[in-house]
Length: 317
Image (cartoon, rainbow, N blue to C red; front, side, top):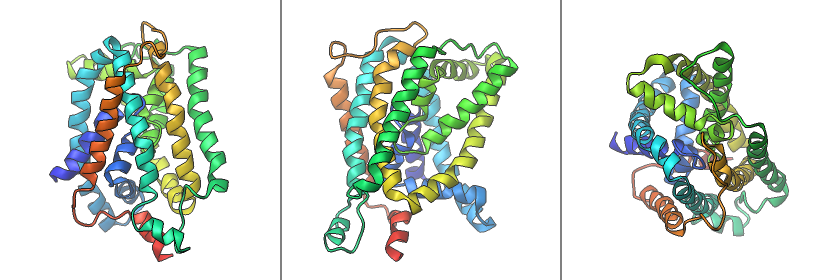
């Protein structure tokens, strides 16, 4: 139970900050396929599968709630006052995660099978994947660019309206969908849509017993639930049936998220200049690389049967 709780805690820390995906953390730490499979079973499985999935997700979810509550209290202030330090940290995290995800597709022993013609390597199937990589880059960078032109960062979640509720519902759907992808983070999408600071502020206010934020948070939460139930099956099918395309698109979204992080300061309530070489900080960046490397080391600690279900299925085929 402690292991699953820690996994959820790490996902929450990632999900709470723009540029880092909880899915990336799950992928790096080796429980991504089980996580996606459990959500799929909870929504579409048989009763026995639902019970098993519920027990697992309850453990992960407990750690996630604790991590998110702690992150919200700290980050709502930290993100505003030390944006360039935090953004440099995220850039290091993503930069460190990209080679690790490539390594995850090329595990020891699996490469030998590929060389002998007994397996497939997602990253060698360039013809199938390069277009999807470009789509991933354009998707994230394009939405970031468009949001900068539209300018939608001024949302007051303490003042509820029907239009704002509907908008938050769809933002919640999209953001939670991104959380399941080891590439683009839900918080990055909240940042892109100008909802990151408003949502963080609303959650912090609600935790302080300010219930004026409750209606907007309820609409946002309903969107999150709806998105979780609808997107997980699509992700599972894509990873099982179209893995090279899916992995390349994940890589493309991660590359595109660099642009989203660089533009992050411009989306604050009081906009600041985008990141550049002058305000980039190398030490936080190196710490980000170290953090993601540490997560990979934790993943490699023996913990029983943690083989990836999807690749096992591929081997059986």
